[in-house]
Image 1 (cartoon, chains in turn green, cyan):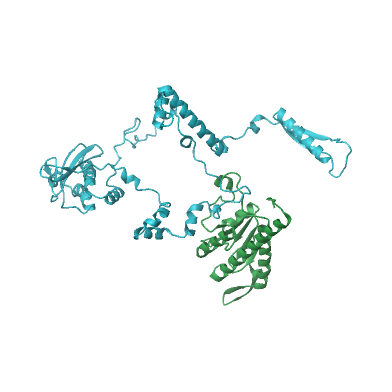
Image 2 (image 1 turned 90 degrees about the vertical axis):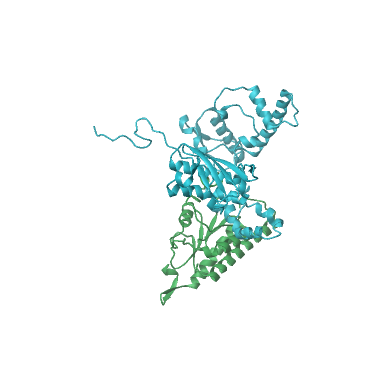
Length: 177
Length: 340
């Protein structure tokens, strides 16, 4: 995480917001593309303060959320857990990569195992190595998480609207894209 | 051109697979951008013969059989038609033929001497025979319907997103005019009260002096007790004609006797007279306690019945002395182990 830090003052790590800006743009761009191509986006966060906010945001977008206890075989043992022919998420967005015990969330590793791209907000105590699009940022404070929720919601809604427009324009009814 | 080549290649593959249990690997040896006048296809088919054991599907790992909606619908239609035929055969009216009639008819037409009732021929509605299958949770494109599907417990976690929470539900039912919303709230409730309705409450009986009394029976280990609880009393308890203080010198047994009255706050209001046989000291006390609790059911309200049931006063204790097994000294104790 040192590369993402601007510096340290009074034992408080300061993130470099220019880098955050670039990473965030890339991450949002990727999310928009996934949403445009009708992918399943799963929002994960184990921060109990924001569970309700994230779940409501996911419901409004039309995407999915998992802010509860993560059972071990959800991604890796999906056929047994849910039934045959489940479609796994095409993108997992972590609004906080740590779980309640301040260890890395199991889903990060599982998504890497199942070849699912991940976008994650990494704080200064997180490990960004397994995420495809890490976004250095604060995952603890209310205004920060609300900002992220707002940005993701905006991106996904815009992507879906654009998709609908293109479908109407070109009369596409393909379901595979 | 290439389409014809591909289709003939596929036809060859399916033909090969159909005739023998071998898998074939087909390598079309034509480059796609070559335009041919005639479909000269050189398709190499490598026959890979595998043994049948490798190809046999692991049936056990597939899980329980899945029944489709159409299959169940067809079964229901067949059941209804069969029901009418059966009614015709037995000479009864097909319109008013009940399940008991079906059971009687089947027992008559297919008499079976099997001891296991579940092994005998049975004709029931398909919903009772085929296990309920969970409906598929996702649409054609694979996207799940519920936004919390990936948590595993979607209906449980989605309750927090309802307009009303559980505490509010309870509070609403306590307010006046609750009947308006009662139906919505009942959807979340499971009928646990059904258990208390299974208690058979004997009606109160009145003896010569117009005093209400009720009789209850109880058993514990090998002791059986019959208790008569009378109203307008002052807390006298008589066991087998003897005062309870003399019959049960131990405090613990007397506490067991008093527990039902104490629970209902009716300590000095009833008289009790009981007969008890069998068992030991503690077993007799437990038997009398159960008998008293059952006798008191006639005197109290339904809510109190439910609270008594939850306190465990109405549950007969199923523990009995475990039998001794051959090769062991007691029920669990083994013989002393000798090295030689």
